[in-house]
Image: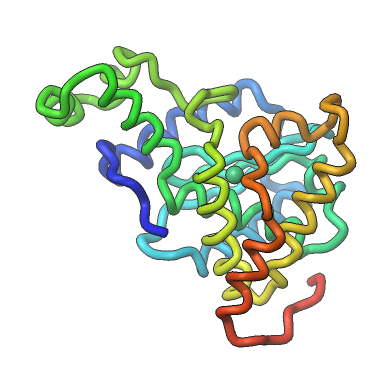
Length: 233
Ligand code: ZN
């Protein structure tokens, strides 16, 4: 899939993501950069990001010190993975699956595309085009748009989820991981959660199940040359 039409330039996207990241980090307790878990996630993230479709974004990976199972990506590259997500994974490919899925939301520019849609509903393109040139932060505030914790624009549609699964499948395959493990992990979390009062509730609120997840991944994998996937590092 190709990213939808978007009012934000890539530079603006990186800038709003950085600003939102600074806000997120005031609210989300993080493991230190020197923590071995953070270093492991950053190494894994760099490996996956090196197989993300061009253009390259300045991806960063940080670990939320929380037992809730959650992961999210901000526009332009900042990605946060909770400790609970790492603990819930049965193997490295499952964690790599969540992270590839998040990288794919950045690649597909899903958050800023959703914001673009809202801005177009509020003002004609002829006005928006001029506004976007003048200090992006102030303009977004005027439209009530922010990308921090709980942002409406980080809640993905089912279509966005399908796209992130598809792009994520290719990133996993190119990085040497079994892409099926991404769908296996999502389905495992969903089954364990069941009745709504789940540690993964926020994750599924932001990443709704697009349906037939495993079948879609298998269909994409069938188009790729079979290879031996790598085991846990
Ligand atoms: Zn998602």
